[in-house]
Length: 106
Image 1 (cartoon, rainbow, N blue to C red):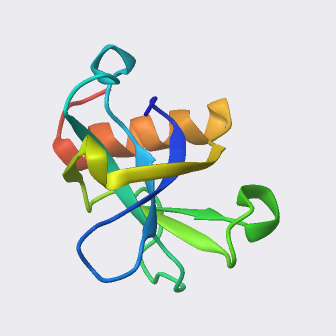
Image 2 (cartoon, rainbow, N blue to C red):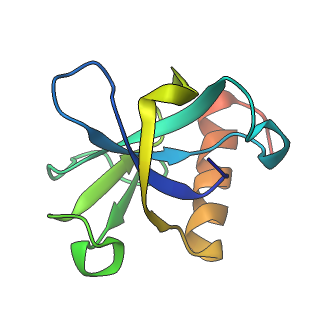
């Protein structure tokens, strides 16, 4: 799983959910992955905590939001089929939001 990919994953919630990989590419072969879950409900939080994604762009069943403040670590075996990959500008937005959420500066 490479940085910027959205894939289906088993988060232990009964049904697979889409997640965004945010770990560095050199860690792609690690036994764990760092992801942000996507949710299909409208989020009241705005930037930088949420990035809205259209179903017509992602190919997911409905519009989604990436919750930047819900960082998860999963065993790599819990990650499945590739859905899509974020565009460079979207991934840059996520990078900036992660820096803000984690207090890492710019």
